[in-house]
Length: 81
Image (cartoon, rainbow, N blue to C red; front, top):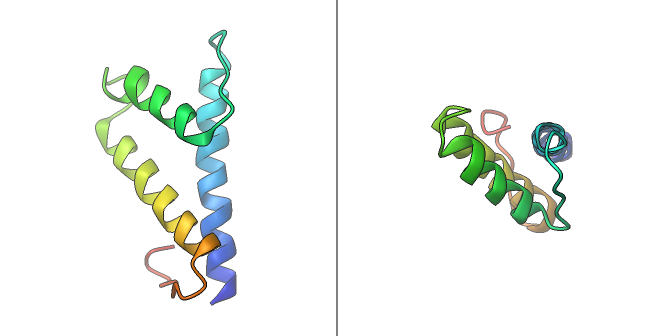
């Protein structure tokens, strides 16, 4: 369903912009999403400033968002959203 695809997109971007807000405390910036996430995972998740489960949730949200946005055959399940 289309409404779930949009929800997956918005959920991921909520996570992404929250990460960017945390990183705004540092004098760094990145052009690519994967670089933002990699830096956050390395410096905040792996050092356990944030729980490790957060890293897994970020990866899961990103994968679902990519499937929702770019795979025309992807069927969104409400429980995944």
